[in-house]
Image (tube, rainbow, N blue to C red; front, top):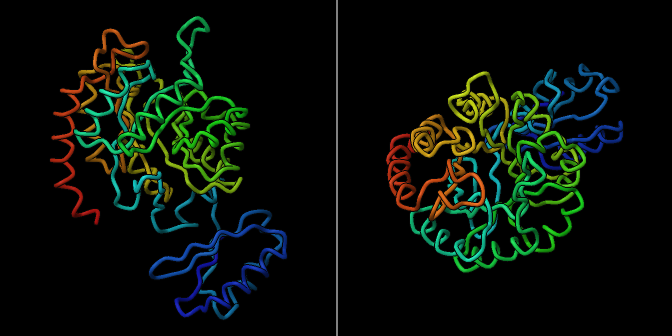
Length: 339
């Protein structure tokens, strides 16, 4: 349930209404837009008579919310959420960012890759120190040492770090290290203990869609995080598993406008994992950009044929340069309409 208040409602009156609602045992989410104030009611809303609520002087109207996701719902929060990723980098609400770097942190080659993607226009550095792999015998990442390498390189370039977290027990480590954005990968999209644990922090979370997850399941995963108190969630479309075998996954570009319609959270697209092949990354990056994505996550490696993981989908730095040129061209056309 949401209560849409009159424009003339004073701060004192809003606070009084919030206290009245919370005394009924409900949680509230107050969103203050330019033209209206929206109070979202979360919990057993049957304890409140909607007609009584609507009869109050400051209430314009009351509306039921049928979707199970509440805090992630645009009805609760009409304005786009802008997530501060640190280092002056904002995403959402007209702020567009590109996250780039290798799939895995491998050592000394990270620095030259990072310098190239930064020079090309990438604003956030990605790299996996912990790697979820289908086989237990495949490379699992450098662990804590990989985090240190990633942070050292990103610090040199004043870039936020985006890296995957797999275990709830590592949340404290990531926070202590100062990781800017914790990524939850497709395989952990419904790891509810992990979602709850990152939700207890205020660190931005890049939440990827599950391998066969629906849009509603992605939004419910975001709800798990937000219900614990962390509003800084970035949704990521990275392709889903279908019957098609010519690409690694099927890139669901529908998800970008649908998520923007349903939710106020920023939406990022990952064409690298979606397609699985270098040759398809650039066209799908451009398509996602044109579809209105708030950002892109792209894998870049200086020598893809020697990459420790996912080399087949990585761009070389030169290919990334050309891709960024075309992204800027697309953005120059669509950005004025967004703003």
